[in-house]
Image (cartoon, rainbow, N blue to C red; front, side, top):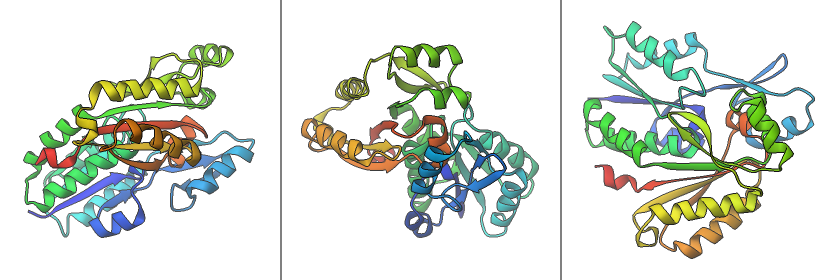
Length: 287
């Protein structure tokens, strides 16, 4: 069975990986007033953060257009036997719901299997990579989906933002929580629960919040990290990300740690200076 693998741009896969793995990416958009940009196509990482810092307009984001997704799936139906599409959390974007609607529309043409990752960024990318690996090993969609869910269940994802106002203005955090947090200079540790961004714990400084995440890592990783892999994700603060990696690597010398970035759409909600850490068992554990 020939399976097409589709994902949102919020997985932030490199162009090299997308081309090498033949992954089909649905770009989300960032909007500054009347200007709309396809993330990572019309507006790259650095250009986005520069524009957000200097613009008087607060950016918003938008899911891929229904017509674009429909056309993409119809074209894939010409060359593939099935489609698995991996999307960022349905509580952040409507892209998963769009895929479900189109799956129903095209059910007599090609089977489509949408996955709501419940997360985004590097952890979402890991689900894409697992799907690709399993498809290459001739797993069927019915075999792939529960293994992807196992990976999602095993994934830990925590982050801390430098400014709560972005989350509040983007509708991802209540105005009251943002105001109190800003007044008290709180840098809360955030995570995903039931596909929503929630406050895990309230911390007074970003460095203390990062140390709290380190303790969560210690509680969940064994054997110095030999069987795990992690990603530090940053919003235009690579020096902080590198320093965090060095700290983690001392405690977990066998843990594979990558440094990734929050792209424009997720950066719209988290703001510049945000840092995140996601980790899970290595993908080889799911074959």
